[in-house]
Length: 178
Image 1 (tube, rainbow, N blue to C red):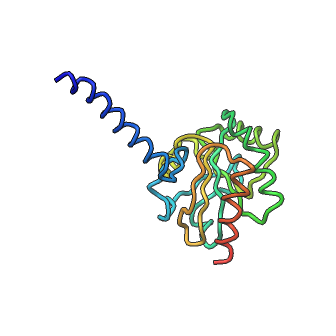
Image 2: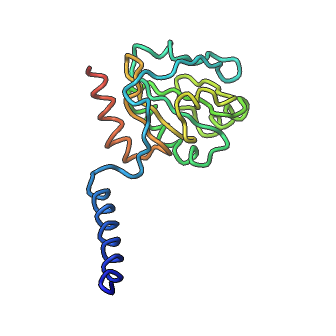
């Protein structure tokens, strides 16, 4: 019985160490949040543009590879990400579009006027319905949508230059060639 008192904690420790060891060696990125929509059709939407401008719809995006970014003027990480989006929109032949998430159109327009507008089109998702349909955890989030309208990649949080170079641009080159 005395041996059992010493053996049980040792066995529990070994089981926990084994569990965490398998998780660490699995190769899965613990920062990557799962998306049920990966490789499935993007949700259909039709949004008004900012300030009465041209709107944004999924039907209008089909037939082209698109990088779709959810942002908001009230979002501090969106400000951090914005220079990366500006470079992406200017330097690469990327169809970059935005959705202003739960934001007043005048605030979104002011945000883009102040920081620069990298988007070819921007839709206004005032009530957050489109964000919910995409399974948005928060802003910023970025999706890569292929020509057939399927979501191919999801980036949660601000895009970084490293993620753009290592993941986004190679994916876009592959999709553009296909």
